[in-house]
Each structure stands twice: as C-alpha cells, then as structure tokens.
Length: 174
Image 1 (cartoon, rainbow, N blue to C red):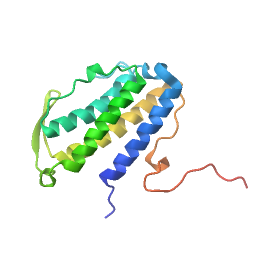
Image 2: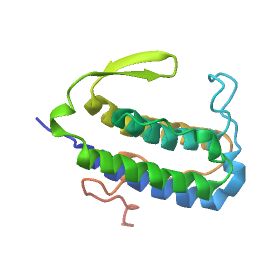
Image 3: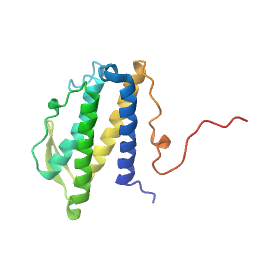
Image 4: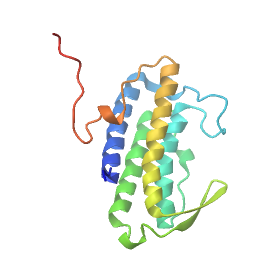
C-alpha cells in the first residue's frame, strides 16, 4: 500500500507557508483585511484572522498534547504579516519538537481534550495529522477569498510543490 508520511505533509506546508508569506508581502495589508464573509461562526472575520488561526491552532494542539496552558492568540495582530509569520515559525518549531520528543508508545492512546465547546476523545496521532490537514484546508480557503477579491494567487496545489519530486513548467514551443 502506498503511504504518505507526516514528513511529506510537513514539507508541503512548509513550502506553502513560504509561498504565502512571499505572496502576501507583495499584496501587503489590504489582502490581510479581506473579509471572510457573513456566514462564519464570527471568530474569523478577515484573512489575517484565518492565518493567525492556522498558526494558533498548531500551537494550541501542541500545548494540549503536552498538558500546558493554551496560548491566547489575541496578542498576535491579525494585520501584521511579519508578526503572523513569526508566530507561525514559533508554532512550527514547537510542533516539530513535539513530533521528535513525544513518547512513541503514546501516539495511539486516546485522550480526552476540550476543544471549543466540545470534548474530543482522540489519539495524539490523529491530532498531529489534523494539524497539517487543518492548515492545508485553510490555505485553500484563503486562496479562494483572495481570488474572489481580485488578488492574483499562484498555484499552491500539492501537485505543483517540490514534495515527492517532479516538475511543472510551461509547455515547450513546437
């Protein structure tokens, strides 16, 4: 059976973060201020909020797995691109450290966590995969929001990434 590793998803999300950071530097603050629309749950009103949410979720899941107090993401300004991505570097460093040091015999032991107003009984392994899938899903939402608001967005698909090799280039003239 073919398997995709957590390392492949880590590499892909690292590539995504670099591309988004570069692209958003080009478009500056206006892109971060684009509204997410009226039908959310009220927590994420602008693109900057979604980016902060991506990184804070990663940080907070690491803290949950380690039994630490949860970081309050409100101190990270949603309109400051560099502060957001510095927070992302911090959260990713914490996640990688967790992956390297978490006791191997505990990855598949279900634990109970309070998440928002819910109680989740899940394994640390499932949370680790969720952290990366959660990020991938939100970057796709951001791409859609930016495109709908006239901001050009490059291809961010896994297929176009350097992960697992291959290349994409314009066709050669004949």
